[in-house]
Length: 443
Image 1 (cartoon, rainbow, N blue to C red):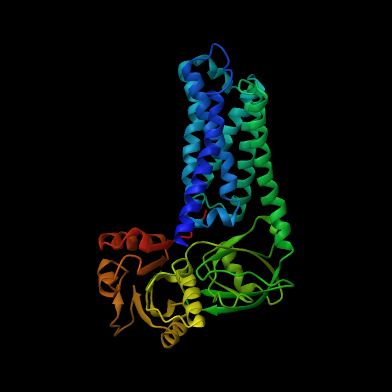
Image 2 (cartoon, helix red, strand yellow; image 1 turned 180 degrees about the horizontal axis):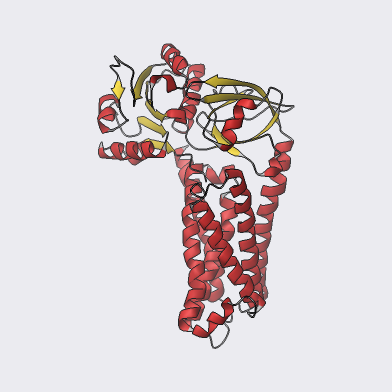
């Protein structure tokens, strides 16, 4: 299985590089307009590369399972964010080179007198700056998630549309049929992605609704939302994966939220998501009533024991509500009768905040489970681990690996905790491929 994912991963990287590089071939093949200096051609090349990257951003966020499977959603979304900065630099370099080597082109910045090709290009760049700025400072600007997501899609669409208009009106590199065909193909590809994401995908979700079965309070200000499929068999998932949920709204409203399954993968007829009240949508979960329609898009993610069938034992390191994918894996192992040794290091603020506290204790009877609680503020008389999951705690409780890949480690929790644990594992000499993190930082 791991080899298959590696092959798929390499394949999609090569496809991505080909698609990004294809517009650059325009500068190397066929007739080039006369009297254009090297720096001007370089400027155009950088602009083409930036535009190609921006167009492909829609594919990265379209949630194609076959695309994300080799890497996991976390990595794909992280790449989406980081490559946006690369695209921005390339796109900004396009006009800046013109301004440096041909100062008279600064007049193109005047949207009232510039030709339409320049107006489209300048407007696209300004919108791109606004798009990236709003994404970076969304939380500090207190932009509500759903509103940001809607405007993110609108601005991204306008940026690509205006950039393509700029290319078409400039006309310098549309002087042969095959060059025109290339840009028509890119345009059709981009429009097709928009239609799929905004029209076809919501229609498919509407045809496979779920309804609320129960909403159960949990410790730690969390709620377990259980849903069941309506007139369809539901979905199968690997324990530890997640799905996007739409509730109190239509799939067309772009109001989805990602949550991990906390239920066992052996009982796909009833899906449970354990959600902590942290703001926005999560505060409304407790108000959902049995029978209300919800829509589930999934499963997604590579954070699963099922992707590591070779493992002789597992270590789960969870913090707070980061226990949810771990709980799915533990429940699945119990239902399957999986007796491989498991160590769970579970960090919480205090004893009363431990989600699933009682069930975790009972799972020790069904599993070969070593449960270690780590409390920041322990109660009086506590003789367990205190503080945070650090190198010392890991040294005391990590099982010894008989060989590489024999012990697989899964980490999920607040981002500072994940960073600290990953650093500690690296210092302890744990191979990079033997630990897996679910950061859940998708926006």
